[in-house]
Length: 374
Image (tube, rainbow, N blue to C red; front, side):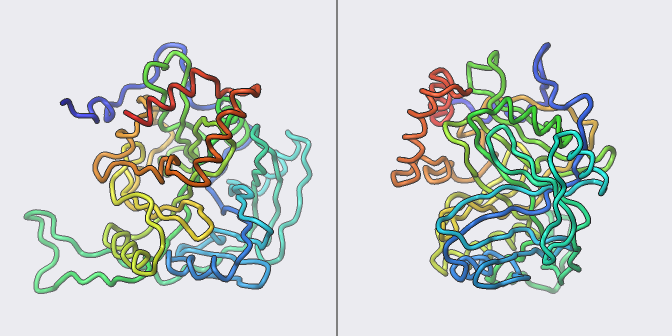
């Protein structure tokens, strides 16, 4: 049997006439993700998991929870109390305060002030899936916290540690920062172009269904365009699917030992492990995926790729085996096909999507099924 990863590491780019992966004249170019916003019914339970995952709360009231990493900046995650669990949307950090005004003028949306706990201003925009997307500026910057130091490693004959042992503590991995969010949409091409046109994101990699490249991509990994300054391989990833929904979010930790020992801590405390440990292909991150008590998928990652604006998009087929260079096979839980309420909800969404006017049609469904088995 041949190597299932054959060809997935190639640097091959677009064919003639394919999507260029960036807008010629975007309204603004955002600098980074600022935070993600959720609603959850039980904030006390959410905080217990957050501490075990490696966050530090900066605000904890019966109605609101703010979670930060050790890097300076705004909190990574804002959680407000609500009747049911819900992803409210991402907030992106503007590269300059005037960009919020520029976006507001271009879209006819008002500029609003954020709460005093965050400071600054925002313009709130609906993307083509109806998700609220915030672009913020002048937010309060929290000072850095003491970071978790990476382990000193001996690499083959490159010896850096002598007369000392390795004993990484089995304790929560200290989250450094928010890395990216992945969203599924029934209007993938419209959403892709919207983020390129409005926020100036650029594509690092496109994926297409095997045998359907001529119909265009179905997943993209988008990074911030910081010019010659390298940025994360992806800050936002989007995938075509039968429902508009949150897929997962990812948070950087110091190194593999922090990720692995932190995972053992989560396992010992009864939390649900979804998939990992492994190394991705697109982005190259070391990864480990967990479910929080509300069912949201969250990722610890380390050692991701950084690209500047000169790197053109790569193109590769979307396959289950192509999600990792090494590690265990992608689980049914990670792929969203594990029997249960979530898979039933997704199945119902398939039938609804096929009846509606969107990009998820019967041929795309066949491509998805083929990708999941390949």
